[in-house]
Image 1 (cartoon, rainbow, N blue to C red):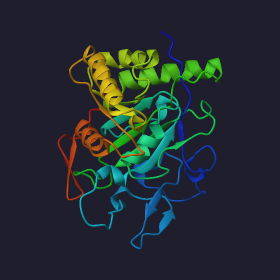
Image 2: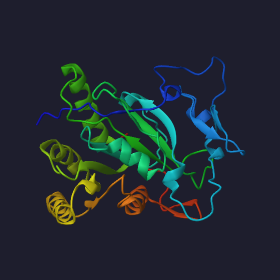
Image 3: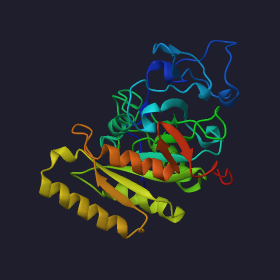
Image 4: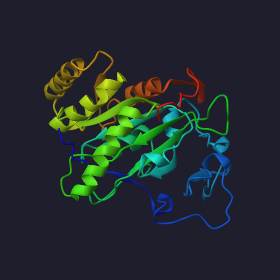
Length: 291
């Protein structure tokens, strides 16, 4: 089955796009990220945002009291457009995939309590990169993040060049089936139109890995209670035919439905838990073989 891709792929503010702006010549970079050309955000002790290269040991600790998800500390890490430039750190990754206009970028921002961590292009199909966001601090090496959230290009948008479609079809297929660090997939579906042919095609591509899929049925606020319940039931039933390890839930960024449940499931799939805003890894670095 041909898998059309493109659409609501993620870019970020201009300072985060390596194609638009490179770091200043001679500027020092942390050794872990010395091969990546970007200027991520960090936050100093006063809370002021500074644009600079930084060590992952300087992760911002939110000053507010009370419990919050580790996903709220997510930071932009890098953008790549081919598999040869993927980070090779052996850290667990969760990938986000979904049809264009299904609300993937909004869902990521809601889960991370940030407005522009994932930034959708105004022209679907034009921006086609894989974006990595770092989460937490590794318990055995404070210079590393604990894991990555990976934002894949949206699919299903037809108004892109045939050569671009072919490139991203091959890229997505290779990434989701061969990436050893990938521990699971978060699949974004519009609750009003779940399990489309393209969604099923992606699931079938991913199925041979035997890794879990968690479906977020976004925009559930646009359905009444009975419609939402029916959408969840039909999606869960369809997913079960691919394996018992797959799960689904209702989600709404507008009404904040299912946010905490989704955060907990994502951290579970990454193999990390949180207590007092500190990461406790239940697994060491993922093996790099096959990446």
